[in-house]
Length: 118
Image 1 (tube, rainbow, N blue to C red):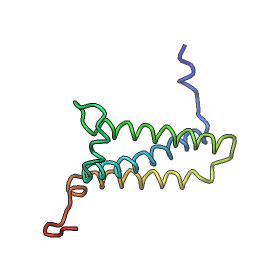
Image 2 (image 1 turned 45 degrees about the vertical axis):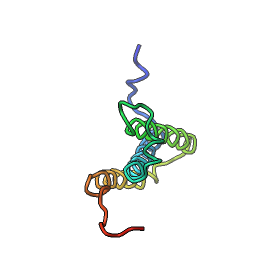
Image 3 (image 1 turned 30 degrees about the horizontal axis):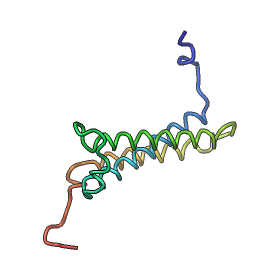
């Protein structure tokens, strides 16, 4: 019944599309979190559920960006030899994970210089 989910392998283009989409979604998530923390109108726009607050919009945005990027990259790399892109996609994913980890630390996105008014 569940043989579809237990294949011996998946296509490389499919795996690289998922890895690229995850990297793009992580980068979009930390940028959106920064904007939500800094801009009141963006924070209000991201509130989908009042009980969850703006995190509901952040999760929805990340899921939508992942889905769209995954769909685009799957169509782009369909029936192509993408073995030469394997190293670059993995490096991009690592940079995305590290940048997400660093940029979502509270003292990074909450940093401000007091006394300066723009």
